[in-house]
Length: 294
Ligand code: G1P
Image (cartoon, rainbow, N blue to C red; front, top):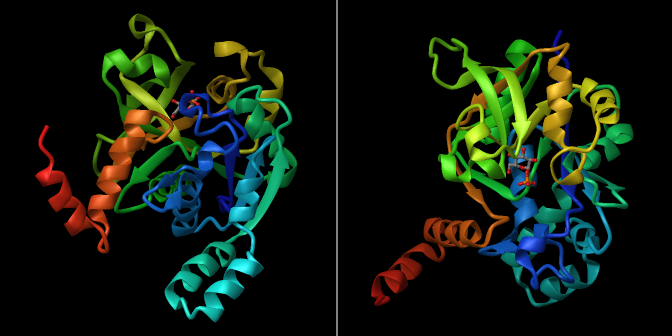
């Protein structure tokens, strides 16, 4: 029997330097796309994928994340007395949403280090990791797509996306061979090797790892065994490469559109496209954009 994935780990202890000064006193995970913080998109994706147990790895200055998912008595009381039913429902939906635990990453020593901090809360079971910078708009939630592969093969799976050569060095990159799956041959790969942030000329392919992972608990031993890598940090990619020595890992080129919301331009694109899709805003916003003269 393949064990069920019940938990999702959200590394959220990064310093958010790409978004300074907005992130000086506010976690980047709380930056809103239209009116919802980045991390909530990820948490909703986990829930829609059937993963209800959320573990957030936080750091200094991240208490806004905890407050966001907590009950706000004052706010609820105010909305109640003012008969703002819809807003009250929206606010309650956030705090009712999930079972969340928090663990601290005292120093920002890398993504692999952040995942390792969740070890005790995860225990000896498979789990998922969601990077809330990567916002993915998809018909079937991206994590669900990976879980379908995991449930078939019982092995770790990472999300993959083709990235143009000039941008590839910002990612973990895989060397992988296509595997026939579900009658098709173009989305699933078996990974042979992977490298974190290679130079464009050294990249083994144009397939980049995107921030969705289904991992098996062996990753923790590997993360403990490896040395700091790219940027002097403990990298999750290096941990996975270590796991590869003894276990297969798959990559899945997911269906859907990914926005790099940790980058200013990516964030703006996501904001515009998400606003255009909104029932309450889309029409007016579209008319506004069309009326702009450039
Ligand atoms: C992290 C991972 C990298 C992955 C990327 C996806 O990098 O280390 O392997 O390709 O997320 O967004 P970061 O963007 O945190 O530098």
